[in-house]
Image (cartoon, rainbow, N blue to C red; front, side):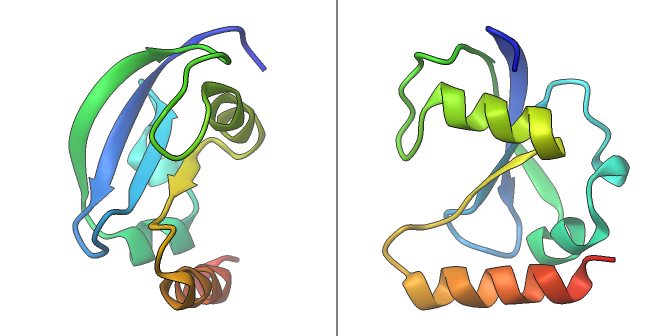
Length: 97
């Protein structure tokens, strides 16, 4: 994991309050097909310089940077809708190779 990285944040065109964090130069086509299918068209929200100690609304910079290092993205979904999260994860698993 890097000690800091420029990341881009996109919101989902299909799912309310759902965001994906990626490296700023990440190509959308290189992300897993299941994620792209379920997420819909990405809508750019912001770019930021992320450090491990950065506090975000629902996570930390460390968690985001670790996920990006491991799988090229960090997916943030609404916390209050547990059935929605479970359903989204099931759809993602079905669409993954």
